[in-house]
Length: 94
Image (tube, rainbow, N blue to C red; front, side, top):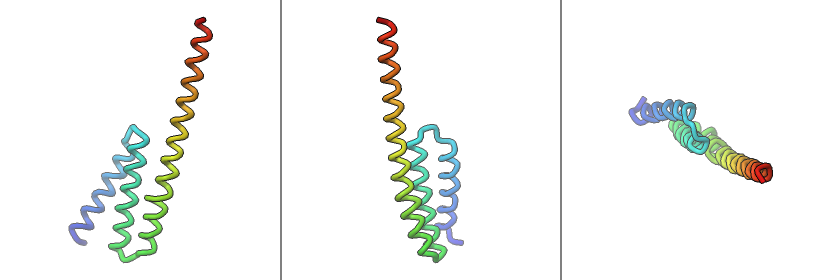
């Protein structure tokens, strides 16, 4: 096993731990994306290009986009609910 492969495997472990311990959802999504990209490089080193392409396309591509869209919708829902709560507080106070 080469030094480069060991560094990549170490980075995978660091990414997995960081994604588990991260408090912000956006950071977790970005860490997951980098995990998938490194995993696709490892698949190439293991001479499995079909899995590498699938990991890069699905893991780093489609899944990341879906997570980001979901995060944006969650933020929009939270902002809408907080604005609604502020309006009801103002109406009760008046």
